[in-house]
Amino acid sequence: MYQTDPPRSPKDVLPTMYDLPSEDPEEPGLPDQFHLLQPRLLDETFRPQNYPSDEIFVASDLNLYYDPRHPLWHKRPDWFAVLGVSRLYEQRDLRLSYVVWQEGVHPFIVVELLSPGTEKEDLGQILRDIKQPPGKWEVYERILRVPYYVVFDRYKYEFRVFKLDGGRYAEIALSDSRFWIPELELGLGVWRGYYQNVEQPWLRWYDGTLNWVLTSTEQESQRAEQERQRAEQERQRAEQERQRAERLIAQLRSLGVEPDVDT
Image 1 (cartoon, one colour):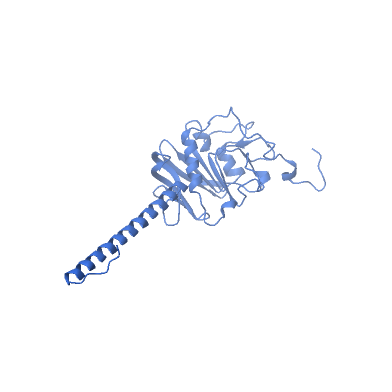
Image 2 (cartoon, one colour):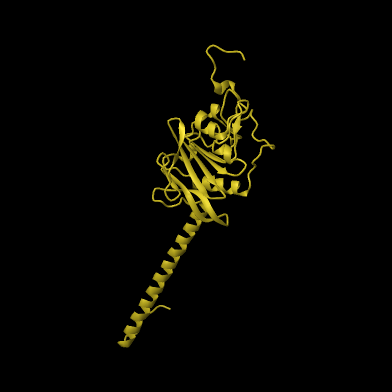
């Protein structure tokens, strides 16, 4: 490639998301129902208090291109979040993929949902063939240097967190299957409950009061319940007023006074 003087930036000369493939039908590990629902719950409850919503990008099963020297190399995290970038590519388009040399910002946290076919790669337990692209663990730890890496075993419901420490991931000892991330002012933990009418343990976000962040559906249900309670309180107050008026009328009549009551 002809080199200009001064050199042009990688953002100008390397492929963009429009140039790179966004899907590979032959790629193994295509999402099952759990891999569709669990990332959706993470999306719905991910609300960092110190970042405006239009400066947060979250994605699941989206190509993540990470190496400008090998522009076709990519990973497809089950879920990841990037902070400080527009929700839309260049504030105008839904992303086809996430290309780090174009975006200029690396993911802050990645979540992988373990399955038998991908567990060893997700946990960095495979030896790399030098002729092949690196595994997920190596990409997240050494190339992208993602600060937090989370794995969740859907069969054992085990939740593990790794934090970048001195250039290597160190596993964090968890308490009650929860982990607080101060940079986000959010915590991630295992919650057992109903999501999309399925009851089981799920990974979801919680706030500084240790309450689980509500989904939009839960917020609507909560508002409806609060409205129902307000209506019931108004009905009870009206009934109390009616009973009080009836007692007063009865007392006046017992004294031989016929109250002037509008009918």
